[in-house]
Length: 511
Image (cartoon, rainbow, N blue to C red; front, side, top):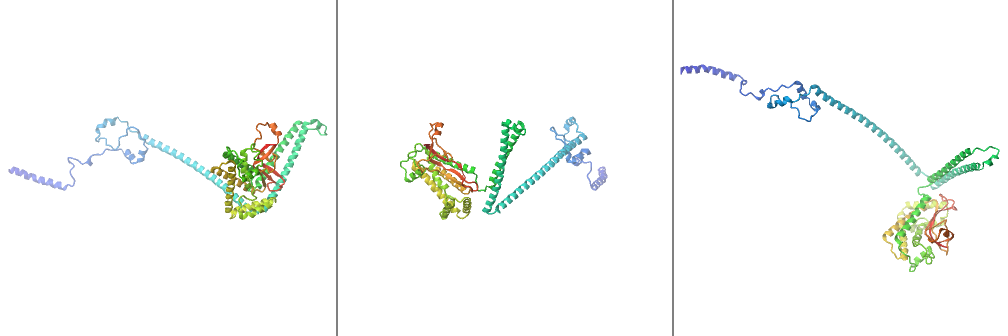
């Protein structure tokens, strides 16, 4: 026991010394059984790969392959996937540094080329934009010039003198143009004389041999003839263009040409005929039981309506009844539908209507004043009432003759035709020239057919040949639509000259 105690006592100082040394050391011993995770050695990575991984732009420039991706480079070679070592050994070697550097360079070159192309397109777009701006500025300048010219013309039109001075200017212009036209006509006449002389030389060369001078050859004469004819045609074209320019320059805004008036009246006549055909083509007139006012109207239009009604065209007779009522619109001395408060103008216009150009000027000025005054509303109301009265008279006459009521749609169509007639009457009243409507009424027993002012709209006898019809005289029965005659020129002067612009449409019979 003493030995045991001695051994224990001998070992105690050593134990104390070791405990004391252990308490002095601040760190744990390296000989621990389980080392910490930080103590595991990390795989050694090349410096080039570490530097390339720090720059992400290189990874962006690398092409993407469709196969299996490369294994991550930060995976330790001796990690837990140690069992796949044979596959790693069999994989293809990684590309070299030169190949990796070449691919980003090619990509950068492609980007530079695309950038250069984009810059070229941008430059071309800028040039096109500059051209468009230049063109737009030029167009704007042209528009501004046109606006200035228009404003200047308007100001000149507003500053024009009164009607008398304008008439003096028109007369002066007309005289100058007339002189120029006469000069051109004289030159044209001289050229035609030269042409006639040259033709005479060509026809009779023997006669020319007796003269003192030697005649020219036929070829020279033909050349001169063609040149003279060409010059004559050119002068004629100059005359025609001069006349057209005269009419366009001296015509006022309210003035209408003769062709326009003829076209308007022809359209009105066709509309009346279409209206009568569409509404009364299946009817038959009854002349037995008709009231007295209808008999008076028929006697005014066609005195022998009972005796000659068998050969007359019934549709033409219906149209004559409508035209007879329509003449109350065209025969108004000033305007149709004038209010009763202005009835004094009617009598005054009747008294001075044969005063020539002065009457036309007064009539135009009076109409313009009436349309711009306060009585225009009353004027329009009275005009509508007058039109309604004319429409009622026409429908009543046709009903007493055919026993057929005019439908509301037919009345609406007839109202539109009457309004067109009122517009035509106003147009005629505003003209400087004087126009007259010829509506022939057979007040006598017989009246001959005048082909200068009349146009037949019916066949006298369809079985008759053309030769026999030419030998047979036609007689006038009744007028279906009035004709239009112009007295004087465009300025209302020389009223002794008349021109038939539109022949009256009449129904004829055998004499």
